Length: 386
Image (cartoon, rainbow, N blue to C red):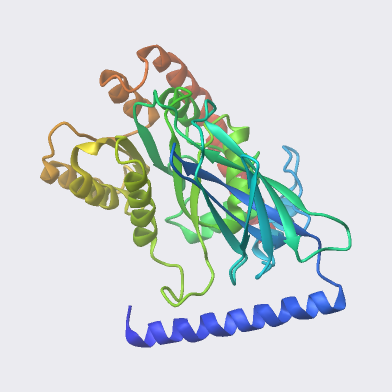
């Protein structure tokens, strides 16, 4: 980053925080602040340490999505997510194993807790109770619930998967289409790539942790979390990003740094666990994942890249060349046309049960037509609006 952009980022961040802080103080003084909510994000941990993060926001009335929700309803909910108001300086209390600890939210409303468990938990998800201590609201106490994923001892490997155009249709390489899909769909109407749910269930096998990476802002956490649940895709921590102005990055344009940092954080937190990386050919996933392979060596079992644009022959050739140049032994580097291609390779290596292949293949065939139809409907509705 140039010195000018860095100074501009510092100045913009300072101004943004001052304005936001003044706005919150005025709201509190006038009693016009909406009821706060505690938005806890699924955390991750092990037998030694548990991490949980979240955010305190004003409740903008984001409702649960429905299959019959209109594009206008979806657009309204998306606006409310984008317009969410964080509450800086809020005091949050977390209760874990009978002990309560407190933390203050930062200028963007984020809080973070670290716990030291006294025992090994048999369940994969550890619950944490949350309460808002301050500011108090006239409507009464504000509480929330958080969860931390702890991989069980029998876990054989972990999975780190991109989300955008790997798990769900996003069209991230086309900004206009991406905006259409994002604004006019919801967690129930957005469709996963064919066969992903069955493949990820086979990889997960109720013991292997899955982490999801996305350059989407934390404002979309509820949408993505609900999407995974509605599509029966295994639950796992989402590593999103803050789209606010900062001294480090004036505008959130770099996907590579965010994804690399997220992957390294996971790999270094679980040093004894090997991983499978899953992405797509649309952005820089192949380049990012190969950097990880070079750094972490045989801890990476496989890299699966779904070729979402086979018509882009130059891009396909570049990825194939990258894989050939890597020449890394005992690591499966695959550019696959669909989920079935990755699943077959995983079954050959024993990472999934071969008995799951018929379900993955059947789901792939079943999902393909609805996914394309849903995608076309979103575009058609947007065209009519325009």
